[in-house]
Length: 52
Image (cartoon, rainbow, N blue to C red; front, side, top):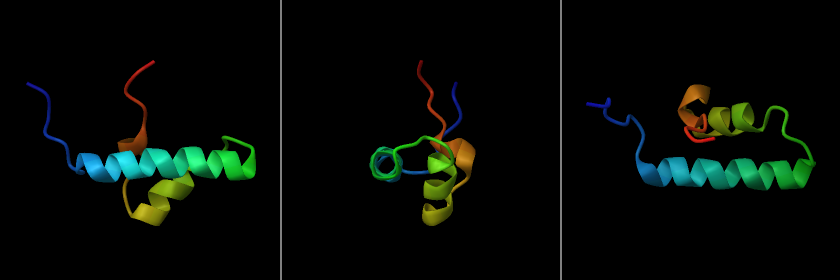
């Protein structure tokens, strides 16, 4: 049985959108997940992609 999610799906969806928006604005990938995680007050690993 998988562990329960600590963060609601709505927050995760919002974070993903913020990462893609930030990458588009800055033109790069470096540090986008860390910056969004810090802004939302969540752990960086919580935003890690689970798929390929």
